[in-house]
Length: 118
Image 1 (spheres, one colour):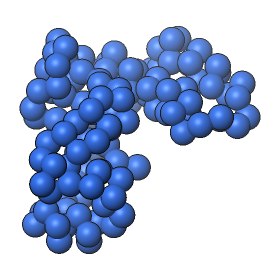
Image 2 (cartoon, rainbow, N blue to C red):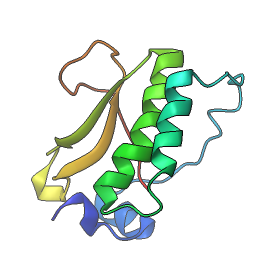
Image 3 (tube, rainbow, N blue to C red):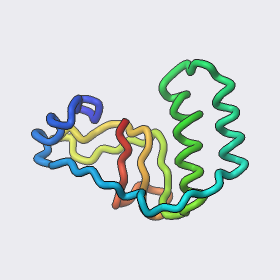
Image 4 (cartoon, rainbow, N blue to C red):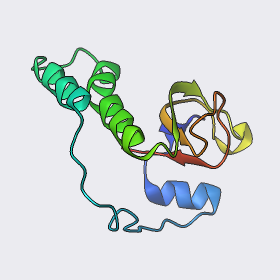
């Protein structure tokens, strides 16, 4: 089993004995002015009316957002397209589109890890 085999939140809760929790952890963040780099990245992404693959969409839209947030906070490292085998007996294996690790200087994935799920 790989991460994509978990189809629903209920299935994830049952198989891993976890409970979901929704927090509004971003409410205390003040707005910031987007950098010129980010603005240019988004302009470039808009030149593509359709994307040839999910990976292309991810790299043109999601990575610039994560990079911009990192520019403003410098509190995490972004890992893209990494194998993240945590526990194969529980189905926690496979490639992740993006992982965020708390150490901004890290060159290896280290805990705590923040996972973004679409």
